[in-house]
Image (cartoon, rainbow, N blue to C red):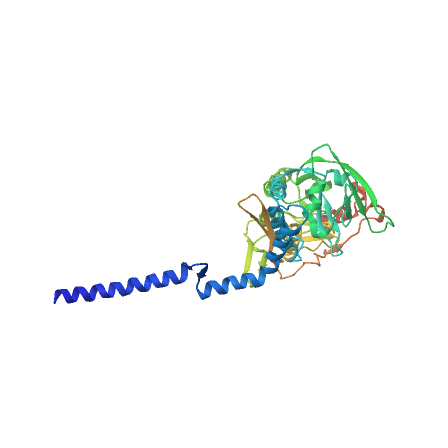
Amino acid sequence: MISKRKALLWGIVLVILTSVMNWTIGNFVSLTLGQKVLITKDTYQYYTAISDDYGKLFMLNDFLTTNYYKELEQEKLIEAAIEGMFQGVGDPYTNYMSEKEFTELMTRTQGSYGGIGVIITAGEDGYVTVVSPIEDTPGEKAGIITDDKILTVDGKTVSGDRLDYAADLMKGEIGTEVTISIFREGRSQPFDVTLVREEIRLRTVRSEVLEDGIGYVRISMFDEQTAKDFQQHVKELQNKNVQGLIIDLRNNPGGLMDQCVKIADMLLGEQVIVYTEDRHGTREVEKSNKKQIDLPLTVLVNRGSASASEILSGAIQDGGRGTIIGNTTFGKGLVQHVKPLKDGTGFKYTVSQYFTPSGRDIHGRGIEPDIIVDLPEELKDAITIEEQDDTQLKKAIEVLKKKL
């Protein structure tokens, strides 16, 4: 009796073990038969799909490496294929970066790099287009302005579908010269500008007290220190008993979204700052708390105000917290994430679109000011503008005085 029960038990165990082994072999192990290999149907379908999708790429790679008149570096071909895949997305803000390019991107957001100090994007016409020069840099001092088209850098043609290449050419060793060819609307011919590269140390916030106790804060872009610096500058202005605040976001090309959100939280009461939506409709909402800087606000914007500066001005406008003055902003309403890879390279990609608190999609449209004020025509291309000639700033002061 006992022996039969043992036999039955061992029989059950044997059946279970056999089933597990068959499933394991069938799903994870291929069987070699001479020169052939037996694989599962799922594995076969997986490799068939790869062949259908990438067979042309593999075939051309093999053809070039076999037939090209010189020996080719496989690594370079692979890198170029990856770059081409990102370019195929058709989004100038989605791109793959070499180790050098990725390191430089990280350096820029941390506060300093060597170059001429201009923020660029890919224009709809395919040209490398200036969003804005960074304040007090060679680019600004040389008179480069928003919407200038950069055609060549040191004689090398650049285009909007290779922004990182153009940016890399403009960067270099401090003290060296770089010549860029620019086309500007209103001029019949392109012109050359030669600049000396400097270490671009980004002082993103500066402030002063204007007439009648009005505080002025200029934010040139949003890097890792901007929110902290903004808080410090506003505190110093409050210690000087300012009665109102002008925030100048003109020619601010944007930067780190979290820094913009922190500043918005300081200025706004309890409200939505911005929300984003991805391809699946998943929404992420950033909100401010009740605590806020209790000063009347006006905000200055222009065509060079983009991205994070549009988030800030849009939140202030939708919340009725301040008056937006100047010209319609650039209109960049897409959010990028940056991802490092193990080999030191990296990539950035557009992950979602952002909307102002009232649900406005500003991409390609921009933020329209509450009060539109143009600079005098003769000052639109000026490198610096004296306070007495700055019609936009004068209007901001006028509006703020009425609020006081």
